[in-house]
Amino acid sequence: MVAQKQFLTTAYGGYLKQETPAENAELTHVEKGSPAGELLRRYWQPIALTSEVGEVPLGFRMFGEDLVVFRTTKGEFGILDRHCSHRGTSLEFGLPTEDGLRCCYHGWLFGVDGRVLETPGDPPGSALKDRLFHGAYPCKEYKGLIFGYFGSPASIPDFPIYDSYEYPGDKLVPYCITYPCNWLQVQENVMDPAHAVFLHTRVTFSHFSDTWGELPVMDFVETPTGMIYVTTRRWKDKVWVRSNDIILPNLAQVGHIWEDGQDAKQFGRVGITRWTTPIDNTTCKVIGWRHFHPEVNPRGIGKEDECSLEKVDFYGQGVGQSFEERQRLPGDYDAIVSQRPIARHGLEHLTYCDKGVVMLRKLLRRDIRKVAAGEDVPTSALRSGGLIPTYCHDTVLAIPPIAGIDDLELQAEVGRRVTEIVVEGEHHTSDDRLTIVRNMLTEYERSVASQAAA
Image (tube, rainbow, N blue to C red; front, side, top):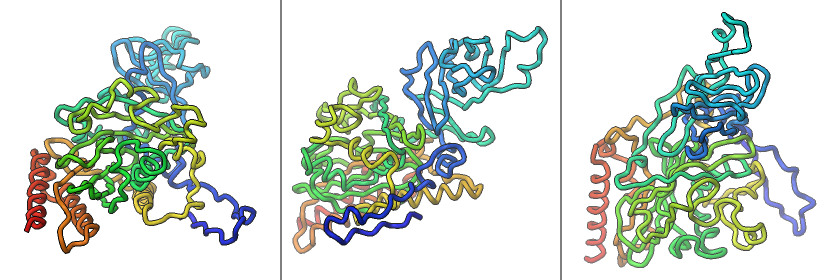
């Protein structure tokens, strides 16, 4: 546990500051053998957009390792250590074949599983290749993203399919943004709903809608896959309940970007699915999909053609404008990256609005220590229609203020009951979970609205 720094108590007391503490290595370091790195390696991780890998290999880094991803001439993807096992030439200059990747220097041929298929400079009959493997990791292409598994080959898990990947009428558009900072401070931003009030609304201009500037009633709840935040706001005669979803350890889901709480809806689904993947201790990549379906783009604000390599279709993500322009109108990228290459937890002064960040760190420490103790990492056993349920949503209910009831207390109660319906109950293993949840929310809305009318 990182010791908490105390506030200065003297005016002009900069000289009296404590020394800068070390980073919280248990949660932030990701190299092989590090606690968080070993946890993250137990999960399939996206490494690149499929569109990035054409006829030549793509060099990339993951968990501090130099690697290449390539496509064989018959279309199979592979991930190999970047430097040839023979003399160290970079396989970025390797030549894809039908069966693998051939080093340009002496022609060694490596299969997608790292098997050495040919060492053509050796005498005929040489058995050298039959004894050797090159470093390799399992690889899978799915819906425009390339995934790798970087853990032990003795325990490769099934590739998980969440319900948000197969939502009716949805189009998943891949994108990625590189951040020159540690993975954790990027991931924590998803569990910090208070920043939406200030950074995204009050401080400069409304990045999404004015509704976000209303300080919500906040709660944070564990789910079978991780945790959600619950924000509940009053907007005119409606109550808007929103939950972002953390699927441990580093997958996150975010709702409708431009939600404004104006139109009634029940369990509106995901607008963004994204991983925060560690490149090394001080660099990471947000990579995933923007979702395009009527619930998250009803007014056509989202732009598919602005979602791709190093760009996405909403404000403040990535380098974008000049540094001075970003100083005047900062976004998520600026607030996150400027916390230092690795944020120093010992310098923070956490408050009420940071409860989600504290909870996320607690859950990560729990799972990190389970892995260190040799235990299996927890996964959700729930299935709905064969898919793993997720909990990100926007729900807007037509519930006006009720005479004689404090409206903040009413909002808190609405948020609590909506969250119970969204997260708890046997209906989450039903094939028609979506319909049941929406019907339950509609019934609840009617019951509260009738109370207001009485």
